Length: 295
Image (cartoon, rainbow, N blue to C red):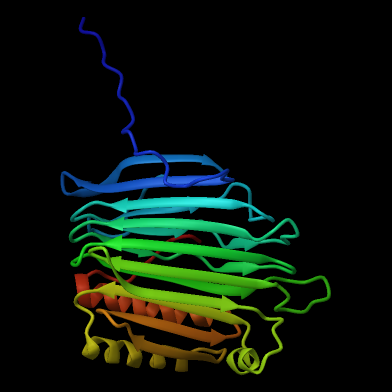
């Protein structure tokens, strides 16, 4: 009888993160036999992914990030590295909302590094980020992508419940997104929300809004005409919501679109941003709408 050879897990390059991490996740996606799969993955601590699944008849794989710890605490550091190889497609989401609790030991943080090869697609569509009383959080997303790759990602920021029943009691949320195309800086997006800031600019920006949404898509096929069509889609969906939501849609300096929403509910922000995602899926790749099947 021939000896059975043990399968070895693919070897990933050394971790790009420094210092102690509460959770680390590293995932590489490639296309094999006409289907997108994980060609390498690694996790440790309070981050991991569920088994992959496929939401439609395309080859795109969907992975769901899980935090078994239930939330981020003071001075927690998380690292996520994602690589989508040439010609592959990944839809990445989360199992539930990301919760940021009180951070008296220092701000919680997450660093995410993304590499997209030629013709690669990444749709990063997490559930909302909920910041509770006295919470401070910083998020860094760095994307290196080929000129013909496609990136779509959004975030929705919401206030958590406070003991006195009031909202908007967290300290600050800082989200910085940097996208490089063929090694050159293409988009730099900074979102810094400080609800307690009493400055005139802060008051005019937030007004009575409690929920902030943002979407960024970078794709060589997104031109001024498509941005205008996306703006019409966003306004139409916003007008259909039970809770009022304000929307801004702008073309990025390179081929892409940036969207901001201000409102009072997660549902209205999600409806607008997911509407943009679905419009891009249909126009750029001929895919149907996203159905994450979480409930």
